[in-house]
Image (cartoon, rainbow, N blue to C red; front, side, top):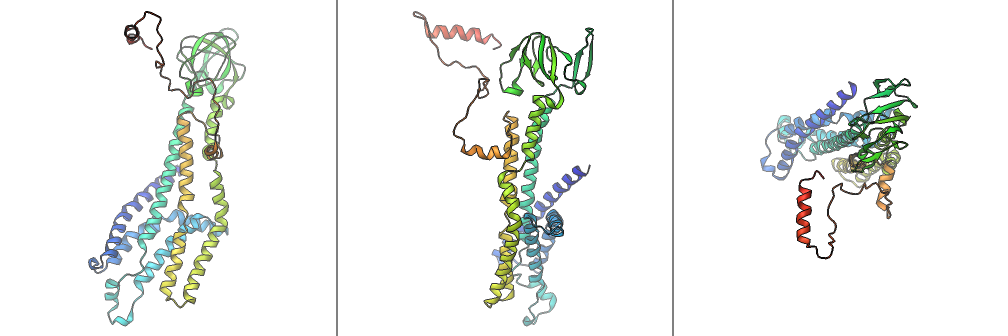
Length: 395
């Protein structure tokens, strides 16, 4: 329940950020390019649009930054939170910094000030795009999880066990033990990896091997859990059950690949501990440098703020894991099981691929590759006869 509540909250935050950011961005750009369109109190309109995004929608970043601060650590969330807070803080300062030399009343200055240095739309933009990236990553993980759920659905739910006295009883597949003998009838899923003791049947192994053509299983052949007996009755001795089956190992393999971190992600985690303090130091040095050069405090603060905002490596922190998770999930849907993100990354330098004979690279659809006729046989007539026969066939 807590997980579902958190996921729903993230969706609401993303939707709220998008709803407020679009008009905020349009209004800010319009008023920046066309000052004549500025109306009394236009800064307040920007504040009302930006506040829900910077405070509530961006709260996950602020919360993570505070948690890291308590442990004296830094992460990418620290930069995001600092950038949003700095942009909002500077904007509020710029709006409420009154120019007493104008001789106007405080209310007139607040409602008609030039508004220079207001970056509320920047804070909203950073929050919105990062939330969108996290949403995409969550969506990719959900799609990848569907592939695992489909694999799990391939397992048999129950099994017909054959006792020593020849009687049959149906039990849940989870209660099957190694050494048990069970019966598989046409159309049923095989519940465990084992050896055929009696019978013969065509077995659909496509979900395990990618082979579209069913393979004949006879006595002494091995069969795997999740495959389907199509034409005959099999009596099978269970050799591997539960988590020991090939199907369960494939499901676990995909799960580990999705939970694992890629080399570039691990590098980002290590670098963030050094990168974030360096960014903070660079922002402070920028501020000090501008002040030492005699620049006004407003200009120096603006330069330091720019360093904080630009340093946010959102692509490294979000786009990379989203791409890797999506690739593993899509591969699982196509029958390609990636052992880890490291293997996926190293695939870019592969120059040789070795394939077995199961036909996993074929389309599974028969086509005519060539037509060779005997002497005296007309090609057109032969094609007409062959087409007539094929048209009435199920092949």
